[in-house]
Length: 200
Image (cartoon, rainbow, N blue to C red):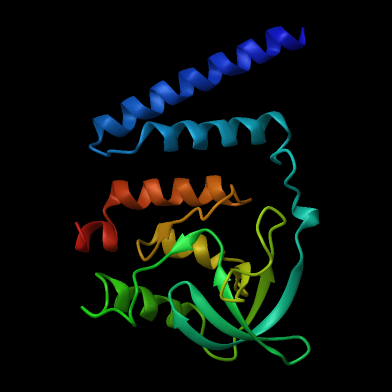
């Protein structure tokens, strides 16, 4: 029975990948097949496991309140934690165009991405930081790796991707919100919003 179910799941996954690839090709999107396969596999696993990917549980994440101190760019901010300590946070799962430190100046749509982050995360705003047990706690620059949620419940990373201010970015390992972020990116590409229009 278990072997039959596994074969059935593989068939469903292959069918979904084929349909997705054909659909993206039809609307003119060149999405790598590997990305489609990974996204479909993750989504199918979530459905079969009741909404959670094996080894990834929302309960295992750590949520903590913080106050926005400064927006450095679209994917990096400085906050004050509950103890009043300044913490630099690198948002998990996104990458925005650079605005500083490049010989040629800001990358395409870097200024717009930074402005969007400033608008969404004004100084003094209360946010929730959520770490992810599939990722390191800190990166090599000692920045806390976390998802950032604002008071109205919006996931900042997902919103920036969906509105065309950021790319989905997987550093080393699959992260908890990867499937949602990839779907947001596909939608942004399809609608040619933000950098998907300005930077092509």
